[in-house]
Image 1 (cartoon, one colour):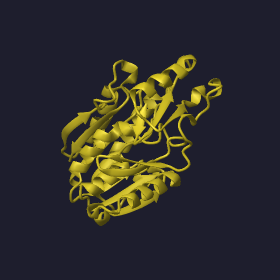
Image 2 (image 1 turned 60 degrees about the vertical axis):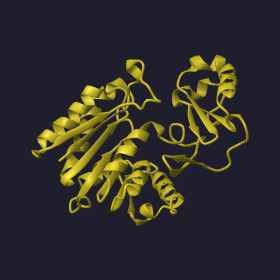
Image 3 (image 1 turned 120 degrees about the vertical axis):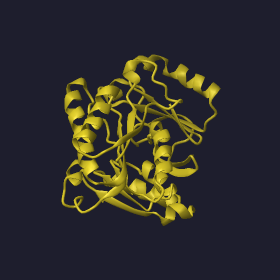
Length: 281
């Protein structure tokens, strides 16, 4: 369950919770004050969840427009009814903060930018420019609206923000990318292995992305590579990025790796999906 200001969004991934859902809703109401509670259902159970439906308002008034919430002082819009996951990727908050600290004076490329979370933190961290890449115009439009929501911040306003609708894999290897270089590149793709049979292919894809991104990194540039694929282990993901860095022939230093934030603990192996690595070249 995620909280956006006074709206709670509860996402369920298995039908085992459905017989006790009303009880769960009552317990939430007792523990967490809120104006509304929205139910989100994983795709694999949406046709098995009756009488519950995807995006149903379990408590409170309908949500007519996307809401707005604050994260670390930055304003973001969120569509808890129709947006991806619960409307926003709150699990990446700590990595966004780190990117903000690293961005001062840098030209930033945010690949798979979604609604611009990393981009806003980079802009507030005094990045010179931020380029968003995403295949979804809807996502890029959301990022532009999020920048508009923060026009009161002069540091964010000074950052040059550009959006490019593209397939990231293709763009990184295209003539459009070739003349450019960046001081900080963030690779945060959606899950590349939604099932076990896609695991090996995903590991290779992470390596290809990293190799292409490293070619666009300026001297002393930083690569931030993330994975949310539960079927790819931490060791497999980190190994693919490290191998790509080694194969580039450039000297690099591993600054840190990160996983789940304190408010999103992974208490069993299958829940340990989020990982990131920071490399300085």
